[in-house]
Amino acid sequence: MDGANRSHRVTFSSARAVGVDRELARVVTQYGNPEAYAAKLRELGLSAAQVRQLLARQIYVERYIDYKFRPTAQSNPPISKLL
Image (cartoon, rainbow, N blue to C red; front, side):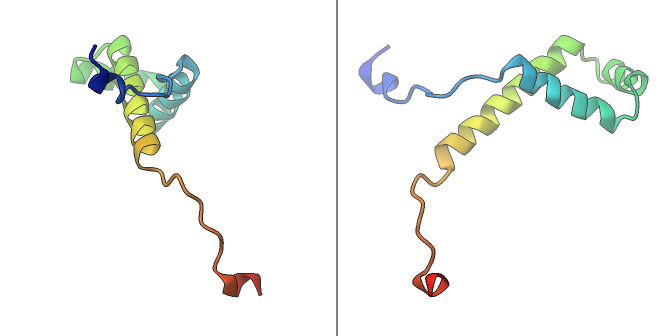
């Protein structure tokens, strides 16, 4: 890897299993019960492992966007709010 690419290396961690588990539980509840969720997976031709991988990737991308575009400087409140 050359120096230019190294400077753009991501400095945050990938999605942890607990985060994926939490998001997966939220998705399953949207279908009302695990059986309805499993039926939807069959309809879409997805395995549980593929869904976990998609969720992990989504969490990773959301973290990257937050990391990359979150304002790094905090401004003080306007002076009028302090008076």
